[in-house]
Amino acid sequence: MARIIAGVASSHVPAIGAAIDNKQTEEPYWKRVFSGFERSKEWMREVKPDVAIVVYNDHASTFSVEIVPTFALGCAPEFPPADEGWGPRPVPVVQGHPELASHIAQSVILDEFDLTICNKMEVDHGLTVPMNLLFGSPQEWPCPVIPLAVNVVLYPPPTGHRCFMLGRAIRKAIESYPDDLRVVVFGTGGMSHQISGPRAGLINSKFDKAFLDNLTKDPARLTRIPHLEYMREAGAEGIEMVMWLIMRGALDDKVDEVYRFYTVPASNTAVGHIILENRRRAVAKRAPPSKAKRASPSKGKSNTQRAKTKQAAASQRQDRLRSGRPQGD
Ligand code: DHB
Ligand code: FE
Image (cartoon, rainbow, N blue to C red; front, side, top):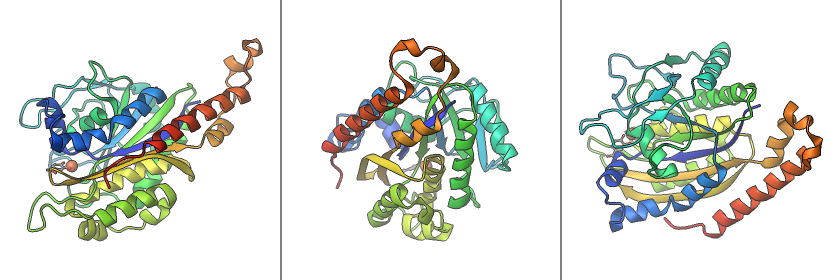
């Protein structure tokens, strides 16, 4: 069966994409930001997911104010980068996973979450910037991606609780998919920021850090934050953080925080990033041995041994990440 192995959250500041495209990543201002993702890229190379589900928001690129779906799932075979005013970003076309996406759509809709199905869609900085931060700038993205676009642009966005419950429904969908796929879920956007109006430039590090702490330890608390509190404490665009709760809802109740990075500012925004892993034992316990594995005991290792080896590899990876825990503040 398919299973979710980890969740990643990352800001999507468009200026980060521009810094990559204009080769400014070595400039001190940007180096501070990019250095926080070096270990994450290593982690991603090691984890090597088979599929990523990227929860993000479209900024009136593929949609417009004429059509504003609350939750839109990308079921297409590919998703080209959108033209956001300066031509499409020079990043690879995102390859989809229509089979798994359709399975998720069916499972989640029958669980009473009314997703919009997108069989054609372009993706903007909301998706491509987090992809660069976690995968670097390869010729081709290393795995297929299922985009899930969430409306956080036009009132009313979904509540944090609704987002969390959708994450749960996505986890159920994935765990009922027969192929052995290892899935990573991205929650993107945030953290505190306000782009326009008298409070433009607002950043609230105290709110952001408490959000990161609770994301790991007490996500139920975050699901009770009302929109007005996000607006007041984290700025108008801080509402993007509800998307992180879809990622968190897709993970187990108890997770290991293996990495965190926070720095201010990048453009007008606080940059936040966290990696949460499902605990290996829980994952191994839920996964029944597949037929192929049961039929070949002579291969040497039992499933329990294999799970133990994976568990050991995961703890080593976590220790490595933690021992070099940087930066930011
Ligand atoms: C900025 C941040 C965003 O999240 C966004 O979508 C657009 C602009 C900014 O900081 O300028
Ligand atoms: Fe944004």
